[in-house]
Image (cartoon, rainbow, N blue to C red; front, side, top):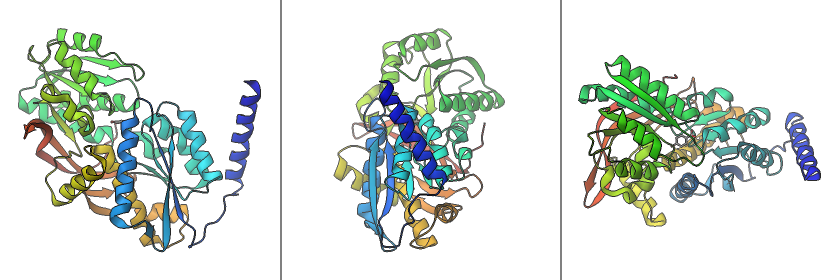
Length: 392
Ligand code: PHB
């Protein structure tokens, strides 16, 4: 045990020295462009990894497996989703041993935060495809985010609710950074728009049991329950919402779109119908780009693409287009610079990388779950355009 710990520490130290001394090999135009994709592929957040890996591979099928003469090589690593030190070690190994040009993935906030110093020390672009706490991009100038931020997708539902007969609410969030972003944003915007928050409850990230929290929420008799839970957790929340009889008690469910994640929505069935959320992506988004995306995705994967998948797909787009702009052999600074201000039409709608913050500027939609041909989908019915991360 002790020996093992020493070896590990020694390795980390040697790795840090290599990073600092610039031992990282220069790459040449003919070398492959290596993308180290770190994802939760096992554990409670495995759906996030499965979605993002599938989307990155689809991007390469649609756009070719080379860019400006360099073969694109995805090196996929499973970080299990729950151990920041594991994510950090994998990021370091990818940089020092595999000499990757880009780090990408990052399923949860604590994992992205743990890897940020590696990106900074090695000057490696780090594409955050999933993790969504506001502060993430401020932790390294090499981070570019292609998913979303919690404050960005929370305020639209907070302002929509009081105009739609929701005057009182209880908030329920997972007790870690993105949940706190969602809670703070919801409370301040909902209150500012004339609503009243009766109670705020926080559920642990590890082994959550939603039953007692939903009972408390029901006892407070609000017009609505606002929910943020990370993707993968929606079904468990929905089941307790149903079992505890909140719907029958007249409590509506609202939230960010994570709770009606397209990966799980089909299996939730009737209980999800009527849930109103604000979000940047629905698999039901009505555009030719999204129709082509969903068709191609479902043909190869046999499951619905969710919002994390578009974070992955657009992350690959940002890398490919930055390579085209910056030439075949750019350093990390040039690659990140080429992503700043980049604009394109994503399956989600219009998308821009904010040149100041390296966060996405995008449309946020208000959506309601409806049955369409026997299956539940989040149908968009209102939109807020060019939404930036407002911070918290
Ligand atoms: C996060 O940890 O930042 C995170 C994960 C999953 C989500 C949203 C945020 O659905």
